[in-house]
Image 1 (cartoon, rainbow, N blue to C red):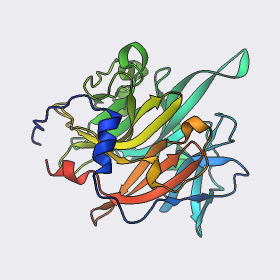
Image 2: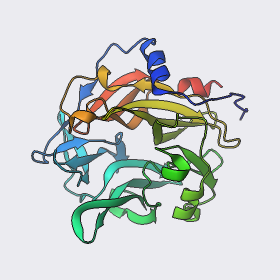
Image 3: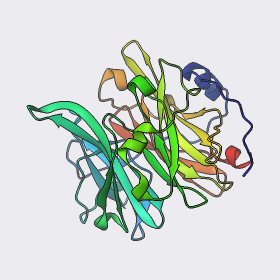
Image 4: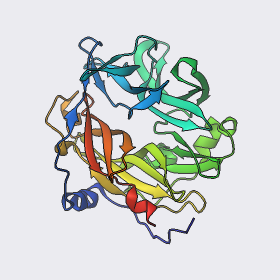
Length: 317
């Protein structure tokens, strides 16, 4: 694997959006995914589809419009709709994700920590990880640090495991991405996640981002699907972005925005300040140079859109 020899500096949402708007867009607009069988609740912040015993499954965050108390439901496709799989119980989590490491399914999400004196008050959150041969055999094996979302795992080309982190506060400000490696799943602890070095030259201090789904690329680099975000007054702005990490040298490429809320159809929002938000759920690469991007939108809906494969350029480095 070659060194990247790329010098990166902090990039702003504004400059990345300007670059994005100058790029040619896909011909097809985003398509809202239809989820049924969960009553009046919203389904958003979905994973990309993955196979469980040969059947495509989407894990989705299911939640009433007026609360953040959600559950993750496993959906399978019936006709044009996705319905809850009758064999799989929901998890009390938010923002699901998956990967495969050493032949095992790794599934995770964000678990809220409630105030014992006030069960409706959120006081913290942690990222939980489960492992198994399939959904039915999943078992909890790792709980991340307090107040940390966007922790992700990936099996590297040499068999090691890459861990992406997202501290906030004194170490990470509003949110910076970190990275470290280990030999086995058993080596990953909340302490190691909290202590991971972070990229200091990626986001502006008043902006933030995180990793949503890492991909092992053909040249051994880690292609990261993530998000970059900012405030404008009280309004939040989240865009989908990608970049690549060299897992041996910890070099990284500049980021690029690959999608924003306005390229999808107008729809519902959980709150007015979340209108311009998309959550990078996952991406399915296709052999024709295109890819299907799966996103949550405005904390209320879920979409799929076909775009140019954003990882191809990193495989040519």
